[in-house]
Image (cartoon, rainbow, N blue to C red; front, side, top):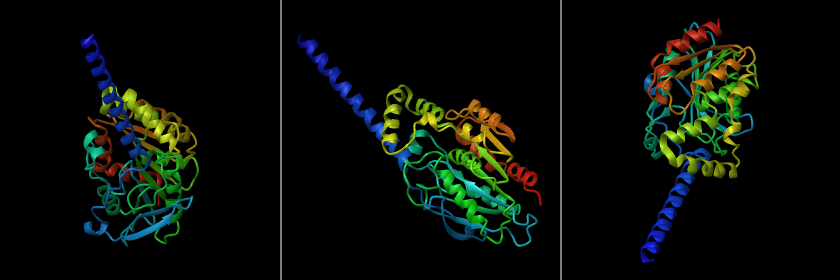
Length: 318
């Protein structure tokens, strides 16, 4: 009997530890998707020899957004063509240094979006880099919604660049990464003021959460994810399964959209992106690139910016 009691007591202790671990992990992940820790800016366009203005402008719903406007060189042949960069979660306008606890736990990798901004600037485009709500130096408006509410930020960015004398309002393009790609698709469903778009590894949140959890938590994901989603929804978030950019992609109108997706993306889904492209009225691609990690798919465009330049040359003609 004593052995039975000791065994039962041990089982209760182990169960309690498991419950505590699951609750702690769920709270941690919920915190990251409700109001993620802010990354500080670590470089400016000026340090790469680019002129720029610190800018602030409102999102469609009035949320204050911060960014940099990088005007094209005075002798640019692009004549006002402008590209807006839209970062992913939980980065800022520069990308990510991959130094947070979440980054280390998930083996995330650094991304320097300034490299892309510099290449676009050298190729003659105006460039707007800005922080989405709940990220960088922009105002808080939790929770993160992976493109739905963030579309109001991109609509605000489009309205802002149209006020700049350097910008041709009929030649505006956007590039979005991950959540930024989702944001692009949700925005295209609401405006015809974007003439061309690149979506790098957009993703349905239900699919992303399941694959991200399985890759980083293993069997614990079955317990952690439902609780994390419940905590997220208690703070105003939508069910993960409802955040499906494919529904928005179907309403992108005539705007050409280039999709880029890594073949070895363990968190996203090539089939998911293919479905988005199929739903898009005027798709380009998907362009599938070899990768061993999700971040390789993002890095591909940073390493090959001429892909973006060629796409925008075609669809933002002079």
